[in-house]
Structures are given as C-alpha cells and as structure tokens.
Length: 364
Ligand code: NAD
Ligand code: IPM
Ligand code: MN
Image 1: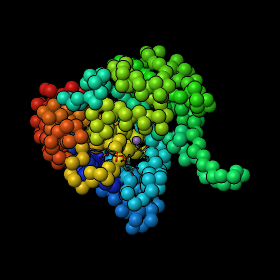
Image 2: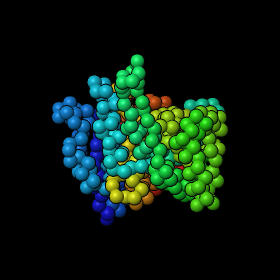
Image 3: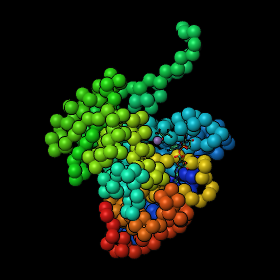
Image 4: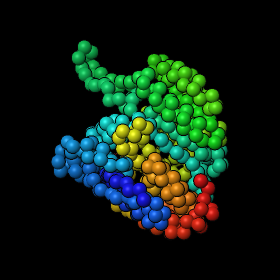
C-alpha cells in the first residue's frame, strides 16, 4: 500500500476539535480500505506557540512542511492577537511560500440539508469555486503614511500579473472541462477595477480558445451574488480573484446550509510543494471548547486531500459516508441537528465501517 506522511496543524479555537475528527475519519478509511497508510505528525504552530515563542512558524517551519505529502490545517486566529498578525504570519505565509496558487472550494447541498433560501432547491447547488490564491488584495502590498498629505493615508494595493492570472485561468478551465456540465463563470469587476480586472477579462478570452468544450460566461461580482441566490442552477465552476471568491465562497456555504460544511484545498498544481487542506471557517471563538463544532468542513477537506494524493476510492468512501450520515439526520446544530462533534464523527465512521451500505446510498 502507498504510505503518505501528513503534517497535521490543528491551530486555534475549534481547529483542534475539527482536526481531531478528521484524523479519526482518515484513520478509519485507511484501515477499512487497506489500500494506503497515513502517518500524522502533529505540528502545534498556532497562537499559543506564538505567545510562547514570539513567532507563528519556526525559522525552518516551511522547510519542515516540504517534507510532507500534504498538510491538514484547522484554523488560526485568537481573540488576543490581531488577526492581521496571525493570518499573515501563518496561513497566508504558508499559502504563498508553498506556491499554493489555486484554492479549490466545492459547495453542494448535502443529503437532506435544506438550503437557506427559499429560491434554492437542494439539487440547484453543486458548485466548484476556483479562487486565485496568491495575488490581488492578498499580495501584501501597501502601507500607512502621513507624509505629503495633511492626514493619514493607507494603501492596500491589489497586484495582478499576466502569469498569475493565466495559470489560475487555465486551472479553472481544466477544472470546468473535468466536470460533467463543462460550464465556467469568470467573476470580475472590470467596470470599476479597470486595470487588473480588465486583464482578467482579456486572459479569460485568450485561455478560452484552448478549451473549446467549455461553455463560459462572465459576471460582475455584485451581480454574481444575486445570481447565486436567484438562479443557482445556472452555475457550475466559478473562478475569480482572491478577495472576490473569499467572499462568494462564504455566501455559497451559507446558502448550502452552513459555513461549517465548507471545505477547501490550497493546491500547488506543479506538485513541487505539498498542498494544504483546510475547512473554510475560522477558529470560531464563540463555540470553542463546547464540542459542538461541525466537523464536516474538515472531514470533507480530508476527502479532498485523499483525492489529491491519488486515493480516489478512499476519497469517495469518505464523501459517501458524509452524505449517508447527513441523510440519516446525524448533524450538528448549525445544520439543524442535535449531535455534537464527536457524535457526528462517530456516525461517519460507522458508515465507513460498512462501505457497501455507504456506497448503495451515496450520491457522489
Ligand atoms: P468563523 O468562521 O470563525 O466564525 C463565523 C461564525 O460561524 C461563528 O458564529 C461560528 O461559531 C460559526 N462557525 C464557524 N465554523 C463553524 C463550525 N465548524 N461549526 C459550527 N459553527 C461554525 O469566522 P470569524 O468569526 O470571522 O473569525 C474568527 C477568527 O478566525 C478570526 O481570528 C479570523 O481571522 C479567523 N479566521 C481564520 C480562518 C482560517 O484559519 N482559515 C478563516 C476565517 C477566519
Ligand atoms: C479563508 C479566510 C482567510 C482568507 C483569512 C482568515 C485570512 O477567510 O480562508 O477564507 O481570507 O483567505
Ligand atoms: Mn474566508
């Protein structure tokens, strides 16, 4: 069997609670499938580590991460550390330094979960968001100054490079081409953002010529929010800038039931660095320690990790177990259920223990 070395980084808040759940599910699927083994190293780099040492990542932290086949990440952010420090020193540094330029965020309505809007039927939401993960407002350019003006000036510079936009556009067209409907929506704001987002529009036109099978259209991001709510079945694969898809993917998760189910993969498509898999949600101080966090975002992210590692069957087993557990009403409070984190995890593992049952009812 294949052996994979995984760096587990639970991080802060509910991060450890949902990563524990994901590790239990991964252990179970490896055991039941028998096709691969996983070993986990627990890396405790988060806000407690920062408060003790003054740094989020040890100086050789990135080199250490490169020894792994993949990284499983929980969340970072603590009430007593400025978010701009914790996120830039840990999460955004990892995404950038490990060249994870494609952030993939699937959103669909799981079995028996009611969408939040009355305009949306469960079968209408089956979306794949492709988020540019290295540029735009997240390029880290800008500053604050008083010089030359009578008042303080802060700039937050969005950077878009032809290279960066072309590689994510190709990735998005490839993703769209690999899905049954072969539909791609390119989200921009090229009416107001007249340089970077006009570049996006141009590159979309260019790259589309390489993918004649993909049917594609363009949307301005403001109108896109309306389309997601009013005409959700018209969407399939969606690509956009770092900031735009950050916002749209939270909206999408809420429409499909809860931000607690949203999964993501930070991918280095060249496979030179390990990719990182993490739920979309944050450290959720309001529910930390209560044991009620929805583990599905983290577990779904683990399924994405297995798929990226080449373990398609293992990944499908996990997704089918999630669907089956939901179908039987085994959900946390954010999805309207009555179970806690551990009970939902146990329900999923019991589905894994009986793959025939999970396969028979699975929808993926
Ligand atoms: P959040 O995602 O942590 O929480 C938003 C709301 O959703 C809260 O009410 C929370 O209880 C709920 N929620 C989130 N995940 C849930 C789950 N699994 N199950 C049930 N309910 C869940 O976002 P926030 O409140 O804006 O941010 C809190 C902290 O997390 C901040 O420090 C922020 O910077 C950080 N953050 C980190 C990440 C990350 O590490 N990837 C992502 C987003 C926010
Ligand atoms: C996400 C988060 C992060 C982002 C924050 C915490 C920096 O919101 O992964 O969606 O904006 O990318
Ligand atoms: Mn976000």
